[in-house]
Image 1 (cartoon, rainbow, N blue to C red):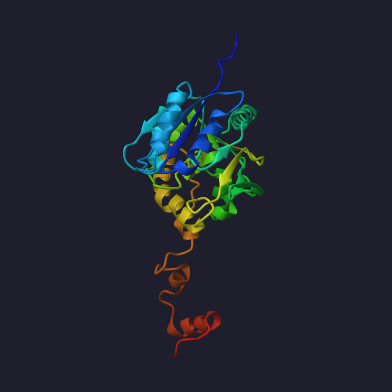
Image 2 (image 1 turned 30 degrees about the vertical axis):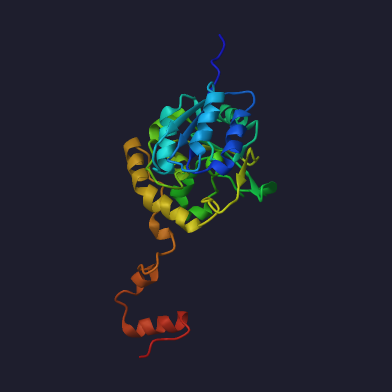
Length: 296
């Protein structure tokens, strides 16, 4: 009996990504040695992206399906729409400004074959600067193995964990996505739901070898505004993720907001320690840690 070929679903959620969109789609169509479908979700673009998608769909109907949101709902909604339409055994994601290598999906398939219990596979990406692919890698240390256990044990800042690849390096089995989706309809950084939500369900597979190029430009979220990204993870995605884990019977592993730098004007840990402290002790503390002490 011949095994049924593995079908890959590829989800591309786009909003006004027309500048680089053709290159991204072409890189998916160039995948070698695998069976795949490409689901293009347009999230209310106004730059002609939808027309470009429709043109690709007409020319490559055997591979491409286009779904039009009609209005801008954010990256999370785009992922939800694409995953709901996916028919494949393995689901991979690509951003409209990135480029895959031709053997990317084949490498993903081999990775899951090597680690069948993996809930997530991710691979590194090379950086494109000024239109040129460099030798710089996006991730210096890839998350691998039981990351949930490590986070429960260390309760560390996300920066102190091994890192996950951005959207275009992430793939999950559809059986895992059926458990963790839909994700909250956040406007950006929804790929963190794909990487952090499944951690308590099994191990992570990873490859340091880049199988895609990550384009650096002003709109990047992964390599800019790091603390904003962690706040989205912990404050916006954290509560629904915790509720999901409770429903799935997964032991908690998400960190609390206390590990992040305080927001401007917020009460800091030092403020809480000093609350109610006698005035002389406070003055002594101030002399130790401040250039000017308060007058007695």
